[in-house]
Length: 348
Length: 266
Image (cartoon, rainbow over all chains, first blue to last red; front, side, top):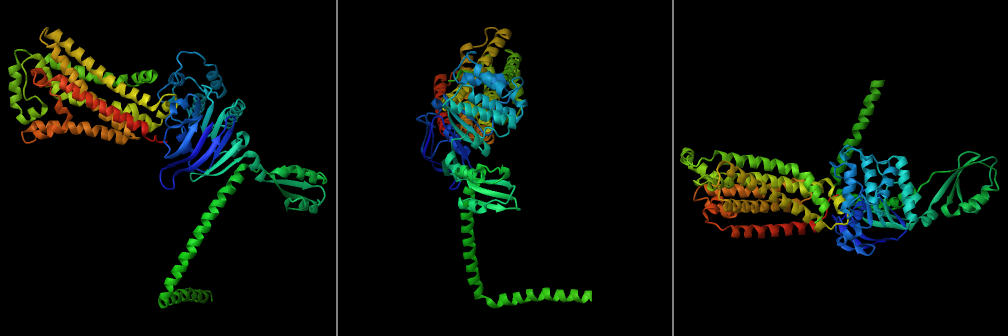
């Protein structure tokens, strides 16, 4: 179980993470999303004991993330965002080295490792420096999972992987979840969250602005469906049940429904003759962006207010020197008029 | 100490060690080879042609007529500062700052080994490899002397010379190691790692120039080790060794302390 209590880690007054509170329970996949520079990687590196939190406590299975980092690492797998391996080593050599660093000597049990190598199609011949970045990422996934850890901390694990590998990786996460693992998954891809996560935390500017389970997030979401009717539908009925719609032509409609009322919409539409029923591919991305937008709007409003105030002040100042301004204004006004007259003359 | 990491260090850095060991061994061998028990007067005459200040600065001011003294003044008087210094700067940087900068140190820390254990392993490798370097030098010096001038080398004194020089180099290595642990990037680590020993070296050289600059030597670590004084028995090797050992201990502790608390870069 991962536990963060009031964790603050400042780089500057605006950069870092501030008063973070969240838990990731056993058997749960926690999606950690947010824009770039929000502090996702900082949080994760703090959990891995690479940086020390300024205030608050962060623990994994009850162990402090900084002082007991080595004890935590026994049972933790970490996939970093930017993979940096020992470039001059061969793949097998590297894997053996890490296994030995984990305190396991001799070729005891490489079954899981071999399975992972096969699953992610990692090329085991050759040096690491000659591998593509995607291959390095796959190798780092194998390294993180080969000791069958209880806790997985994944920092954008699928970035740079091809769709097939991404899908394989997500399947693996689902399998691990079924086996009761604790998973923290930081990502930009919302389909990953939709497919694997039980709960989502949205981080923005170092603060957790949302921490909800997927079910309630889904309920908040407004789904849109593109529907083509054979005959003009009974719009009164649709309105009555609280669904919004937009009409494109006599038979084409877009109907909006809250995420938890899709069954009701089905019942209503069952009385109509529906030719085409397509769900518009709306993703969690749009919900998150709504969260972001709210904040952006706030900022914009604040800035507008500031600007208005500034303008007011300027206006007051300018009132003190009215003559100069009016003279300049006159000049400006006169010039274009004159030009126009010149043009007219030329035309004539 | 982590044994797999220590073995990896050996694998990574043996070539570097061998290059320096070979360079220094060849130098030492040549110095022993050119020694002529009867012709030492000619050597002194040659030195007298050169400006006294230059000769003093190079540490060739007094040349002992015995083989041990000859080696002490020509090899352990000047060259012993330069080659090992460069070795320390390069190795200390390779052991910590380079991996931290490249990010591969993360993969070491993401294994169940504490920071202290890992950094102590790196420090021990640094000390051990310097130890190996001087063991090789001692063997080469002893072998060459016995081959060309059997029975002329005072083995005890030669051993003392090597122990003193070895501990001095370890101290310099620890300075570099400290900066390698302190900084997250190779540039400042290399800069400060080189600045300290180079300034020691410059102060030491300046202090030998004249009476007026002699006080500068007090600020240089290299002044504590005087090869010729050990041969003539003027300075006590146990005192020097003790002093260096204390320095090594303090610097090692500081390096470990700094490393265990620092924020590692992304």
